[in-house]
Image 1 (tube, rainbow, N blue to C red):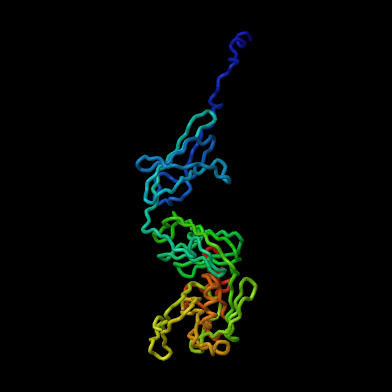
Image 2: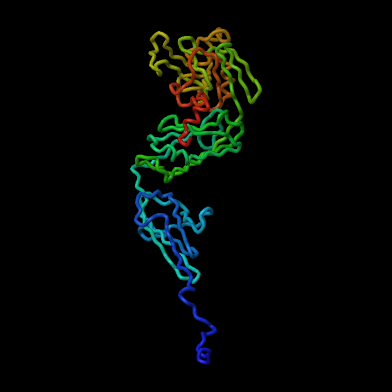
Length: 379
């Protein structure tokens, strides 16, 4: 008993191996040796049994890349490093991260990876242009130089925001052209921004996004005109108010105006209209070459609202044009001053077909809404 008492344990105790804190573990989402990595891939760092310490990314020359670390809210113990700028294409980087456990014992993980080297990079053209004001019928149009193989990847990075919310949807009119519009015309006086966040996006077939672009524009007043080929009348609305009702002449039986909502794209104070531009010689039967005033283009198939003093006697009672909406010079001058790109001219009761892809690049409102929605790659 005495010996046992004298040989008892030290009151201060000593820590056994079983009491040691579990070692911290660091894992990196991008594996060491990875190649063809998107420069926009999230550089995720997961830590268990410890706290994340230093995180550093350097390029192949050892130069540190500026960036910051933030926790991933939905993933406990996971953080992501984000560069202050952008990682470059075709470049080697090394990510190093450390963590310490409760005993301040450190663990480190490192991964060297190489970003993809695209066969080509692409930046699309966008309309409307930044800072412009357009009418309620103008869709957002994005044009690519090459066909887009992975439309869903690209479309998911085309982000539209508007001061008045809409139900707008993208529709791929071809492999290299995508438009965005709501089910109805844009609300007047709306501010719209397209953020085309395409840098680091794989378009498919070796083509990647070259850079990000942001375009902001304004929808102005609601100008919608109704050109009724059955009553030979052009009714002009400013908002919900009728501001003019003009006699007109639409396309003849041989050259009927297309039905449907046309979108104004440009205007000319003076222009020479020549039938040879669409394959009909000037000296052929039905051919023409005319100097025209106050021409407001409403499609790319040659349809304008313009001054036509030669058809004043027919305006209001018959359709004799080559597809345009003919007005007197004075009335055409008023409409010219009233109109802006994006305004709408709705043609109805013409004997011609409905506006379509054959008539140029903006026939968007002639596509029924359910068909328009079906044209999205994200449907």
